[in-house]
Length: 245
Ligand code: UDP
Image (cartoon, rainbow, N blue to C red; front, side, top):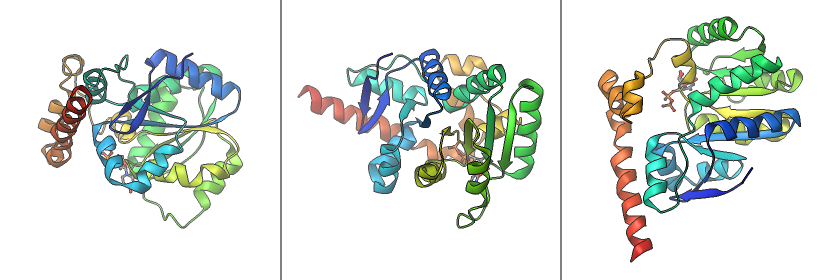
């Protein structure tokens, strides 16, 4: 499996398909490695450009994958294409299926408590062989070490953090040295999606790559965050012109 990386505005993305990525992570799990996965979208790439601390967290990641069509399009524009998007939510589902098959243990950290409880119920329903080693909602005191202590004791195979960025990457980067093993991954609002609190765009909107537009219409309050997309596109365009001039 190739370890080729593709740089988009300074963030190094792994050149991978979803299937290859899951196979790669399955191997790390077999070997009981410690792995830190970031799925980065255009908003994250822009944030990393501006925030030195966040760039430091990304440096600690084992892999960064392209979360969203914006990153895939940018890579193609820059002449270094990525095969497809490998999103946080889809990878979460694939990893739950793997955990179900191999009876792995998982720890869930994030979202509001009621959303977390619904997420747990949904995982128990869809993936009954998964061992849920522990969980905690996402509104905790960062100074309190009890969550880390719980994870250290339970040694789950996978730890999913649904805290939104940059919190989830910060938490993993700061704490990962204290764990022996495990696959650590930030998955943003994925618990809300699995719990049925937030609907993903219907497949049609995903296929025509307008999932972002669907989300904007459903949650107009996101418009400010959506401004990241044209800003990102502009920066990639300038980067491309630099490369060809
Ligand atoms: N969240 C959390 N703790 C916080 C702030 C947010 O657990 O201190 C949760 C929030 O409840 C939601 C998730 O983080 O479930 C993702 O939030 P957001 O939609 O901002 O993230 P995105 O998916 O856009 O990165």
